[in-house]
Image (cartoon, rainbow, N blue to C red):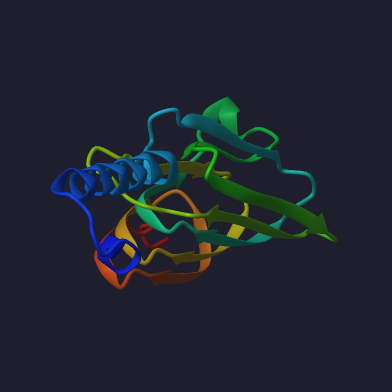
Length: 173
């Protein structure tokens, strides 16, 4: 463990105590940094404002991202609605700005990130079907499930080096 450099004469009990201490520190760090225990679902909801077209940038670190369209009355006056799991060490930066009918929407996870078994990092977002979307997603590890059949997509850029992509495209008109 490295204690023998500091303490040349030590007993087996001292070595065992050092190993237990090291494992306890590592376990506490993993639980603090990566667990979804204690996670809260953060609501993502922004009004449409006067946006006619929006550049959308989604940048999770890993997990599943599901995109769909808002339907019925939910689409009235709403640009996006959804939820994201967030812990105190994994915060989400959200930004939506509109100027002269053109919008920019960004969701990006920041902070330290360690994955433990049973973690569920899921982003579920539904967009207004009456707005032109340029959609960019960078997901280093995970899966995308995009139902774009009712959305107006002007540009689609999906980057998933390790994972799967399922996209349902709009029907030809």
